[in-house]
Length: 137
Image (spheres, rainbow, N blue to C red):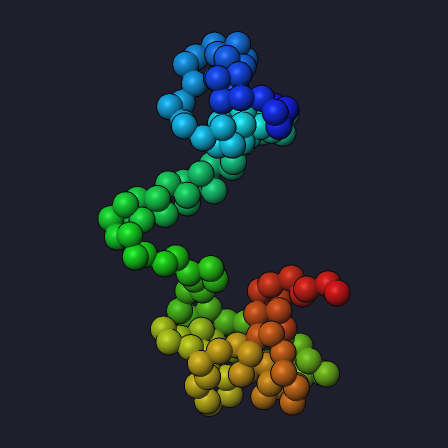
């Protein structure tokens, strides 16, 4: 990473020397320093996977179409999928519905609600059903 004291013009000169192209037209010293550091990291460790790159491009397109777009942080689980959990000797099957989950004849809004019915205690539903790594304390 470039030195913290390097001026914007110094970073532009460093860019030309390292990458043999004109630097981006950034007016922020900090952003140009970050871009140089990012390119160094990519050179050493590789860039984004194709899958992540495509996902980011799709998200950028959605933001361009609708500035108020808010992506979901949770992965979308297809309707009809089934979670199977063995808990204290019993097999529990939870079916994914269009809106929520179905477990033993009842509908639930969240996996956490199903986990509570199964265990009698509050759980993070996705973690209980193996959809998320448990948080280490």
